[in-house]
Amino acid sequence: SSSSGSSGGWAITRSFQAGGSVLCMDLDSESTHLLVGGEGVQPSIWDLAAGTKLWQAKGGKPNRQTLLVDKPFTTAVAFLPSSSSSSALQRAAAAGGEAAAAVQRRFVAGSANAKIQVYDTAVGRRPQSEVVLGGETRVTALAPEAAGTRVWAANGMGSIQLLDLQTNKLMDALKGAGGSVRSLALHPSEESLVASVGLDRFLRVHNTSTKASLGRLYLKQQLTGVCWLPVRQVAAATGAEQAAEGTVAGEQQEAVAAEDGEQQQQQQQRNKKKKKKAKSRE
Image 1 (tube, rainbow, N blue to C red):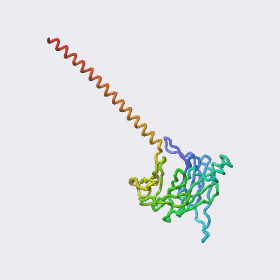
Image 2: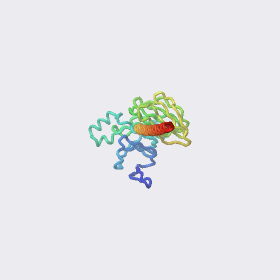
Image 3: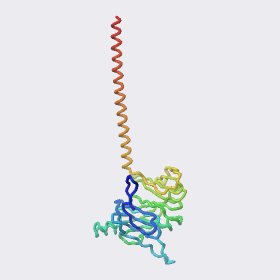
Image 4: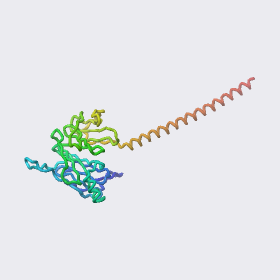
């Protein structure tokens, strides 16, 4: 559901039933489509304006030995940037125009059985690739990089690893988390920073290039979400503060100059009075 604030509190403006127990979701960059996952349901894409389901995934192929299919239990989802669109997606968009392009998306989904699956809606409803995140526990957070070729993934045992989508291999892990990681956030600019929070009550920041820890902050409670303040807002706030400081400084300088002028006038008047008294005595 979506809400809007008012003087009387929050009011629900739109809602729809996504089915099952919703555990995770992600909004695309245009804020028009919602990716939803949860317990008992496969990942699905919804049109926010109409509140209708546009696409739903199918489960992976049966196990070759047991012929069993994993029950749907999606615990993390994330859209891949549009710049990383596959050739199949681009062909489908070109053939079908804007209507077809609106449904064509690539995304990653993490499950309760430690799997990370990559979907391309232009190719089909089943995952195009799959990798198991170490630890045999649920995938709790996914954060794709801007290029769309690598995804940071975290799980319930405090492991944070980098998945290369081109090779479908997991790379070096970030160290430091002492419990389940619940949220990851990459810096919105080109800076190589990733923030993470979890049940160990710490906010941590790592350098994504060197994998080095840049600092941590204890926040006294179990944490479930983290995000960076947009750079433009920070710059605007900083500029406003500087402008305000400049205005105050200018006003202070003007006030000091005015006081100096008054003091000089008063001193001149006192000097004139002294001269008059001296002449009268003579």
